Length: 562
Image (cartoon, rainbow, N blue to C red; front, side):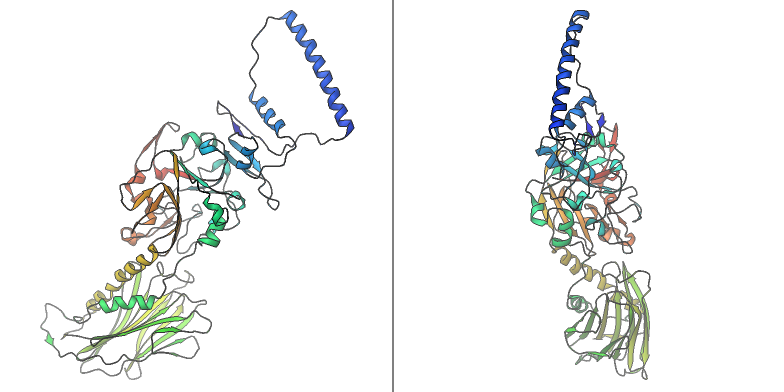
């Protein structure tokens, strides 16, 4: 299909079907004979017309005539590999074209832009958001939430959607993974705009010029599988990093109520930490007695960090997402306590963190065994299970243990012995208050870690429109690929910009979860993530093609290769 000056469209094929396949002497003689008859007929007709009718201006070639002329020009030639190949051979009509990228891919139809930035651009995908305030559903094919289907559509060998409705739904052409491309172009166009009007209706057009795709396998499919994999990042060395959060916590005032009479006690120096063991399913118990990694048959190694000061001794165990769902028992021999020991077990939560604990205090010190999970930030094997943790005192109350049933989440287990300054009536609120200091500390070092993960930023030249952001952490004039957010989820593309510092990818990039403190209480998933939380995406842009205003939230991103 192509567009002429009046916006009318016709279908054109580059393969030249409909042309005769006759060959040999007979074909040549037949063509010569037909041409001879045609010349004679035209000559006779022209002479008669000159005698009978007055001279008139010649008629302009009709659309059909242009179509036939273009088909005749490429009659008998092989199908083009892509729009760039067609343009290099003189085919310069913007519209639909049938291509065959290689020998192992069948023919299919694409949309070609033959004018923007030198032309030769093949439309490979569209990203469309029709429910910005909702969560991922079957229409959000480029995104993922915690129960979704991962980011497979960015790198699998599947196509979906309808080319003719690319601005009304998510669309993926076989060209996204089949073409051998060098550069990429992105258009921002109003939703539900027909193909004849997308070029004039686009309010942003920009493209790369350095041929970067040739360095990364020639298309997004290889970029996101071989060079910048679209995989969720799991925290590394979590036990060693989290130990700092425990050390920074002021444990000494726990159980002290400001409104109560309290008794100052003489602190007892912490000389050693108590023995901890972990048993997975029916395997032998593992004695946790040093910092380092411990092998677990059939599972990923667990990571241990231990720290001891005169006032606090701590052991942390990081259990990564297990290969299979099972059970575990963590047991600590915490010995006997002084007079009037009181055991308390409870739970607390902060953001997406769940914390459960069992604690007991004696005369001058307390001991607490706790467990922390975060399915959103740390991940889980499946979402249909409910991991359960329960705390118990055993062996005449000299041991405390936590039993984990259906272990399928990345889990942090901690045990701390610490001095206290006062004795008073136990209050669970204070335990929760202290333990709730951990999550913000965890988030801080995880965010720094995610920000330091490599992304790919490619300079882009604007040929239509000019992006403006008031935030200093955003630089227009780039396309950034695989930018990680604070929850460890990657965002495939940040269109038209590069993020700096602690910029939140969910505000600017496509495909992923909302992240950051503004949205922690209502995380959601979507192709445009949390774009509705940024004022710049709500600004109206006058559009002469649609006859009204359009915003980023009511637009579609069209992705092209060349």
